[in-house]
Length: 147
Image 1 (tube, rainbow, N blue to C red):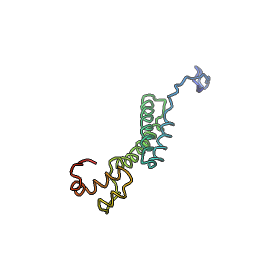
Image 2 (tube, one colour):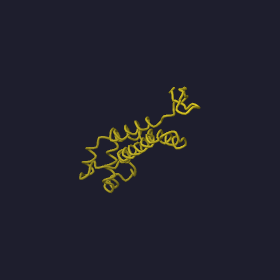
Image 3 (cartoon, rainbow, N blue to C red):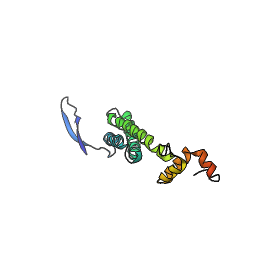
Image 4 (cartoon, one colour):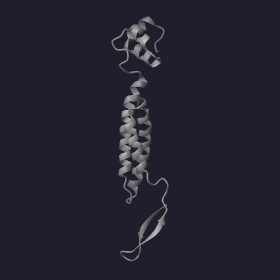
């Protein structure tokens, strides 16, 4: 509970009365913190930290900015900044994570299908080999359309 001076009926005089505020009223600082974390960690663990914190900052910042837009006594700059930083962290994290999910990358470039498959350490890298050498893969394994 915070105390805010309220104007009294006499000019220049104020009285301090407790003002009830909701626990979810100030969303600017949490949005800004989540946005900074999203941007700072968006390149870690395949972009998933940036995606997670980016979505959090975008949601909390959007709610805080909407509340500030509806109430003229509030300033929604921190909430809007958190939402923008969250969007940047989300975008960079997705830019890193989506190619890894789709199997697009540089693994196995310049190698034959056999060399690529022997160096592949998992199913994702095997899929990357199959996509890079698609014609040869389809000739050798005609029954397997999707790896």
